[in-house]
Image (cartoon, rainbow, N blue to C red; front, side, top):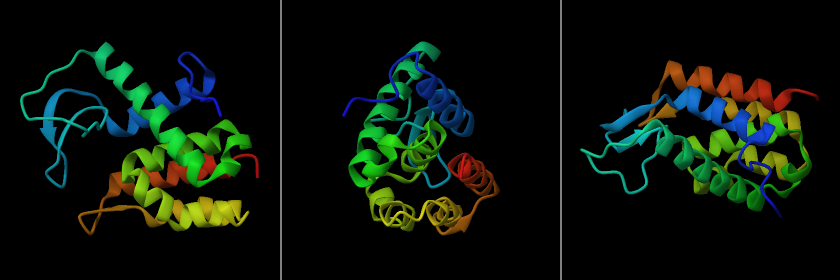
Length: 153
């Protein structure tokens, strides 16, 4: 199945805006709220403290990673291949933030697979903790993702 997040597509632009907006852009490595070295738009793979990137490098990195996460989301929840773009982007945003494994084992994925779209969208709200602590920023992100997920129902 080909990616709906192709460079320049409306879905890709939406995904970059949503995920990039929530993650924020940092051109040099920092430690996130649980101490993981992070750079650009929340990228953690292979990041070492001291790493630096340009905005263009960060944008390209984000799109490539979003395409990877889209593939994982569609593997775990195949029905999203034909869902509205905003629902797919919401799921990719959640997966990008919590990890592919956590997404695939989540109540969100189970409910999508059971055909319970509203229940899946509502389950986004369960994912507002990092390190066992409720974070207002994660709560806002999950509320926004839930709204995108529900659009068109």
